[in-house]
View 1 (cartoon, rainbow, N blue to C red):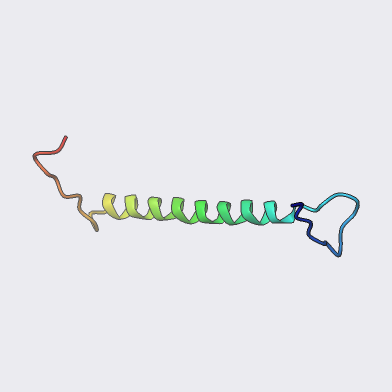
View 2 (view 1 turned 120 degrees about the horizontal axis):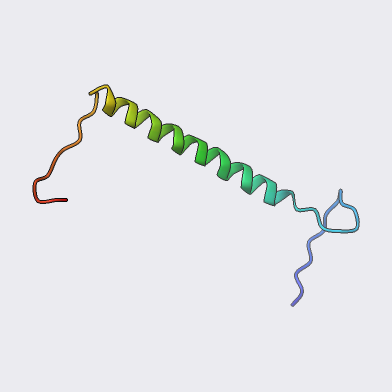
Length: 58
């Protein structure tokens, strides 16, 4: 079973725009998570958030 999909605006080879969309989405998610980490560490360093110390953990 050969699965063929028709592309209206395409040259001789199949366009791979979906790969760019996936990479862009991953880059935006990565940027959001990095900003979240930076914000949390900023809150911790300004004593707005406290880390709970558990004596039984290393």
